Length: 443
Image (cartoon, rainbow, N blue to C red; front, side, top):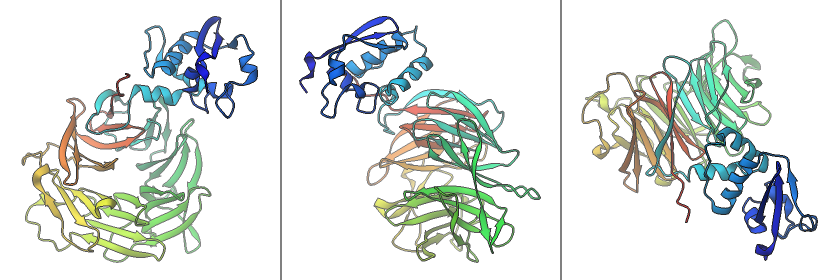
């Protein structure tokens, strides 16, 4: 398109703006301005013949957004409230442009602390989960506090005294929540909730011997073909991993726990696309021993397993606190209470842990309160939380490359990565931090 000569005039709320078609094309096909162009990115004939286009919206915000399209840089003057700008950006279909200008593509070695948010509920939070658009949910006993990507709090989801165990994002509008069963009430289990109003949209039942059973749902995971996996504990034989169709909400499978193993109490589930299997990890201190396995639901078979039962433990520091599968390396990474990383070969069932003490940061000093490390893998970078900091490891040998730490909020009890943000939940007063990668400089 030879567009630079195509000048457009807008009357926005009584103010006149002039720009080029080239600038407006930066908004993309799905934006308000994309409708001004035909399939070949030439201006529509009626647009070309129009002396000016009237838009009954806020002119100050339009000026900011137009400058963003021109330069790629976001400058918000003091007279423009951010929330008003975000509302106007949503109207024009430019909200992704605004987010990209506020923080850049995720890189664990370039993260900077953006903001800290103090929850309204006293005491400890139990879990934090990042949403796909940079929003987050914080589980606090029987409550789930919802924050949008602007970190504005929405009405909380109240489970009426059922303790929340895990949260999974289905999409930007709905979350899946797993909760404990309350004896005598027939509740608990797992439900799909709306983030806009907190309403229960669907409850996921466990069926055993053709009867609907009350159960406690624990760790959650999802597969690309819209299956939901959850660890389940019932009152009789309903111990294991349940599988549901995400679209219909119906149970489609159940992997029952075998004698001498632990599935229903799992701390972590992780779907592995390459292996088409589910990693199930039950860890210390939930159990006295650790159990990690790969389940193949196609033929109901445990294809790989590891446990520390019978392993010679002379010191408690070798207890596994968290685990994560690393398919490209054919290994499972584990971590102990001193943040030593260990690796178990996925090609050998029942093999030993190869511990690496190079990552030891504690130097023998134990925290004043129990704090169990968490692991995450994102874009080829490995993250491990310990006390009040998160360590980042990179490269084929997983060398420590950076640490994220702040002095307020106490130990980190959970963290999550999503929407190009890292959220870290501290143990004191439900404080959580938001870490972002600064946007690249505009040249």
